[in-house]
Image 1: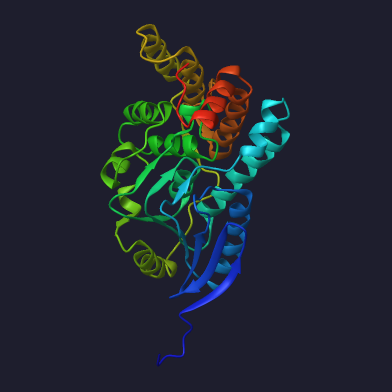
Image 2: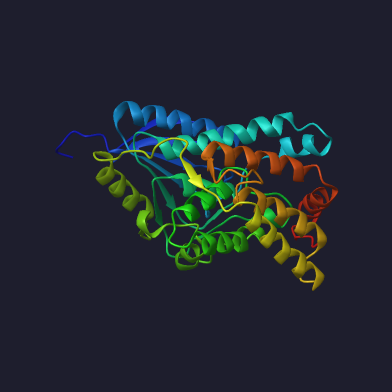
Length: 320
């Protein structure tokens, strides 16, 4: 090694992560056998970004396991919420959202290096990074609706924001609703792009995903400028909410979905379309607050509690 540069240097380890300086980037690796976005992982994101912003390093986020991340670790908070104590869950959702915003608005590029599945909370990490480097066989998606809640880490907000910037916002909202309300997951890059979980403008395909992510981060770091914080954007509004809920009600009447799915879908529609306020615009903070409120509303419902209990006991989804 002629340059004297350190190729890999441990920055820190935590219960669920390892962060090392490697090839001009900080690489934060999930170390759980089945990675989930836990409170420890949220702390690690902040610790890593503190170093990266100080030293002008890109942050690469990846996994040492078979999959990128299989959702958020909310087990203790969900159990307390089931007994009527939702304060801890509300605090964790707020913290999760604020951490996703830090990934989005960091002064250095954040790059998700994805292989395997990036589901629910893992998907929201990918959606809030500045760039994604994705293995050909990776599946990305938001599965929360299948267990009776809505995405609470900015996933619905992100679809609403992207729809507002599309050439056909109405069609984009309808497509997003169809994806989120049934918990769809893309099977591979192309389907994940089709469903809107990945953005072609900020995507690199590579099966050597970590090496490519370090390279992409190094290329972006000199010119990276984060987007403006808390943007305001046009929302679809009450008429679109009614239209989407009517579609779900008709599907229930045809016995294609259960009655509780209408409850879940109506709250996804409410958030995705910006609530029932007559104002034509919302801020990013507004949509995030709506996500938290609807997540907490759904978690109190017997139908959602039945789905979670059934899934925990059987590993299968309950149709109710």
